[in-house]
Length: 156
Image (cartoon, rainbow, N blue to C red; front, top):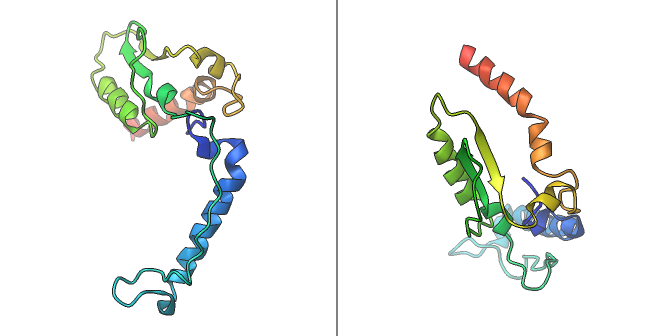
């Protein structure tokens, strides 16, 4: 997954993510001891639980998901304009893209993956430290491999 729009993947936040994961794993270990659980709900007792975390940093007013939500899949003509969708997880955008891809028919000449937010091109050209090698270029490098794997799967 691209770190663009996902502060938990940003390099600046890796210490916080690691610490928060360690706290979670420690509490999970504590849950294995029945003496650390409440009698009725079987939840971790307050005195046993480590209740701490580090803040994930993002710029003021940052919401994330605008770039991720503006991917468009079209046939024969590139997508025009922005979708206006903000999709932090990317799940809705992927679902829409997969639906469009299912409509592909013989005779269509091209499939376009387009993102028209103003900062899409600079992001792809490595402007962002979050994705210094871009996103499309990294994926495009593997397209031949994906294509060969798909052909092999169909043949078997």
